[in-house]
Length: 322
Ligand code: AVI
Image (tube, rainbow, N blue to C red; front, side, top):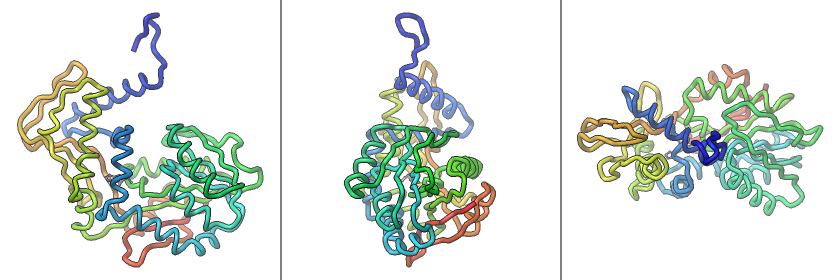
């Protein structure tokens, strides 16, 4: 926007709002309406996502924690001593604590996130749990190239940490591009611990993304509330319904907001028309077969060195090298 001086505003909140509006206009103008899933995470969305991770139906978070716990000694042996852990999107830092406690003599913890307030929460938790460990937050957008700018210990090798199957929210090309950039950031001799959700029975997936308490539905619909709040849209929240759809060809669960009637929505001075039953695709969560994940990491220049899973084979944690 323009301030009183007529200069283009560089206020980060204003730039963010402009990007949200631009993405919404582009996504809602497409023949198959879509909105980028990164916009699900405003303060309310982050709170709802935390609630999702504690739902009985949402198996990924607790299963990955259990793998880190049960295979911790094995992971520590494979990683070796003295690694500086670089976590991409640390959340509340709980998984980092689990990992850092298992590793032998970790050299430092470097959480990387675009939101300074989230970084602080993760840093505080790790400082409290791992006294004496150097903790150096890095404010950066890890979906773009960045470097660690001398934050790591001189001699330490970097261990990237990307848990939660957030990799699954990327399209395959984006996932490869992210992994390739991470490899450049972590160089030389860098490795990476990557969490990836596995292909499994459709009812289990369906329940995980459309829970009985309606928390995932609220998380999805919050995107429309956000557009009403921040983009001056007039979505009628009662006129859209959350749906979780398994896309068999792409092996991914998709979140959709389905218009319950024929209706028009105004946003940024435009009118967007919906047919009854037409949806906005708000997120994809890709599920991997081990073979497919191996190919994906190979395309990014990594090699899968080891893989750990839980007894039911729900989730996987990979050590990448190269
Ligand atoms: C953050 N990400 C890995 C979650 C997932 O499972 O794809 C986001 C989520 N969407 C609905 N529930 C959880």
